[in-house]
Length: 276
Ligand code: GUN
Image (cartoon, rainbow, N blue to C red; front, side, top):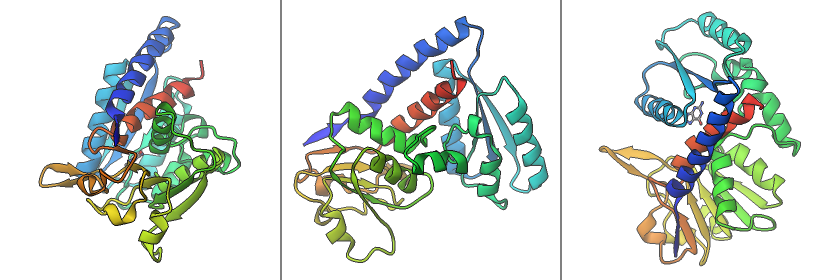
């Protein structure tokens, strides 16, 4: 069994990004990410802090626009419009979940040219037409991990458990674009074990700690665990590592697997949007 070390790969990518940022700064461009954070969801606070920390490390300017959960829609729309029109801003991220307001509507107001998350309907349309532009950070991180580990995607049976807008859906399209045979399973899937047991590559993004045990996994499968579940201050993946470890060919760990790749890919998307 081989452990896919996302942290190690992410660190390498971060080092490459640092060099690109220096080159941009030499040309007088300061790559800038704006993050809109509404409300006080504790997980979102941690995600945003981590994004800000990594931006600083790489030399990217990170502006955080904070709003209370009671903010009026109009106020957020005005800020998105201002950021869309501000040449000094290269990427805009609306942290999900957004309390009280229409998250999808707000995300679609972000200019597709500054859509660092790839959640804008226009960029999702490009993805669905196999004309990928900005790919969401977690799917991009997973695909990058498979590529860096020389794991073949084309022709493989890939089962994704979880159909979220942030991971499952864009990931399924991105893998299809790379010629995988893709199945999306979810909470209503019948005989889940039967479905997941056929996967050459099993990717789990359901947000349920330790859900996947050895009965769900084929011998020699590659397992990618996207879960980040906090219980009593400890982080657990969606896969029960100890249960599956002797059955799999390769597996990511939590923490230190997909998570660090997600942040690295977000910053990589930002540099892509700078467009130099
Ligand atoms: N909340 C959890 N993950 C993400 C992400 O990748 N982007 C945004 N905008 N919000 C999130």
